[in-house]
Image (cartoon, rainbow, N blue to C red):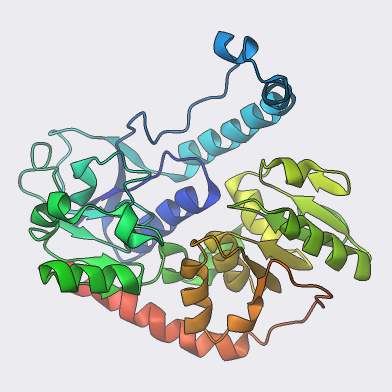
Length: 355
């Protein structure tokens, strides 16, 4: 079967790129011919960082200082993702010449209007390029605040024509059913769909010594506070890999990590402190102790639902928490629940690719 994947592969963050790779590799292992459709709209694609005249004449000296300070790091960061894409992602141009039996839209927040430019291509309006392809979704997401991030009257006519639909959140599943009688299945993010062994090919510690790893998808100074407290009580350093100002504050060692190093840094950390869904997911995949910080900003639900499904709710702690101790996790108790969810998600793809 020839399959094209349409997803946020060109948004250079760890979750977007690694979920793309995971779905590609899962389908390859199942015997399919797979490529990533190279749809790179300006509203989505990560562009090579550059210093512009507008930045230089900005009336905000602090902002200018921060742009200049982080510029070399952001250029290096961009380069690591470009290299990963070149070596690990099989990209084909979006074209009527490259035809597929099936197109899979997803995963990632492809139905979140905050990120998808209200572009109907993410809802299946792609027939002008691929008139004969059957279109399904895998783990399509609208983010957490579904009522605000999706436009039903505009998108339902497109979604209703898809051959099969799966989503990442139960709230989105219910919205589709209640408002348009559209049936869908809830499935795992691709990084959790595939066997964990795929990530073990990238071995070896990146940094010597023990460390607490911080990865923020949404910034809060309490994340750094909690990480520093854990580092102090466990006599280790704090390593940060995002670009928020707090992550480059005194007492933190900032590291420019490639997608491969992201996985390795999580694997060999003493503990991960994160506000990220994929920071949480890869901590589970790598069997690394972790704490997911609840920021109470309306964007905690994705991580909370995942943790609930695996009986790991105690690993989500409030941002105001104090005296947090480093506690290990019995991942053997997680394994059976995870395998059950994997089988359900894998069966969805098996069934959908027979339609």
